[in-house]
Amino acid sequence: MKAVLIDHYGSAEVLQNKEIEQPQLKPDRLLVKVYATSVNPVDWKIRNGLLKGLISTKFPTILGIDLSGEVVALGEKVTRFKPGDLVYANLGLPGGAYAEFAAVPEKNIALKPTNMTHEEAAAVPCAALTALQALRDQGQIKQGDKVLINGASGGVGSFAVQIAKALESEVTAVCSTKNMELVKSLGADSLIDYTQQDFTQDTIQYDIIFDAVAKSSFSSCKKVLKPNGVYITTLPTPMSFVQIVLTTIIPGKKSRFIFVKPSGRDLEYIRNWIEAGKIRSLIDRTYPLSEIAAAHTYSETQHAVGKIVLIVANQNST
Image (tube, rainbow, N blue to C red):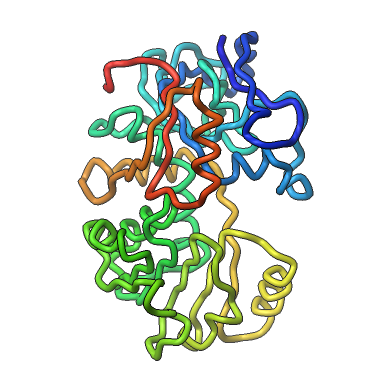
């Protein structure tokens, strides 16, 4: 099968298109023909070695943690799916979706939303799971909570706005001037243009601040958190780990970090929202898998609006 591998850390040029054997099926896994995958920041952070202290990478390796495709074979212990099922999944790190076929644990997979193409569905898993698990599990979000999403036009942030609204909270979205109308269309109740206003200097206080782009900090956000408010970041730093430990012990405002967990059950939950019209994908650019270096380079600018999708195989967008 065709696949994109890396055999050492480096720039986007280390991504190599190669012919390799299909993955071997373990009893609890499904073999999925990949129609589309997506680029997440964690992909290029693994590729360039930024996360080598946190994530163990054995070379050569195939990156890519999101996929949408079709089940073609089952491990002997798989019970919930059959060949021909159209599915989407988060593979977990380091991935394996930058390939024509991927072996996916049954617990990580769900049926694809019926009202999405494979390209749209491939944009969902990592970003939407991160948003859901941050708000629900780390933020303990409740109906009526005042929630601020920093980086609301990005992959994770755009899903966070929609999920927070689906959970009936009041959402303030932070983005740039050019993306304000787009973010408003996702359901945000209030908008802050970060080029004109620093939300950390406001007088309004929030129950949850989700920093989906890790551009702020717990220290700078403390005064705009309610007395028992929660700050959630997507990027761990030595200081954030100290703050997480301290605020776990000390009553009051909390600092939390979200590290997404693959979950087929959560993807089923998200699929229901998608099919009900409450959540949609934002896709900035689409590339063929053969142009993956260009896709990584664009993702590294950190200016993508929504997600970057890679088309692996032609299909009828079913």
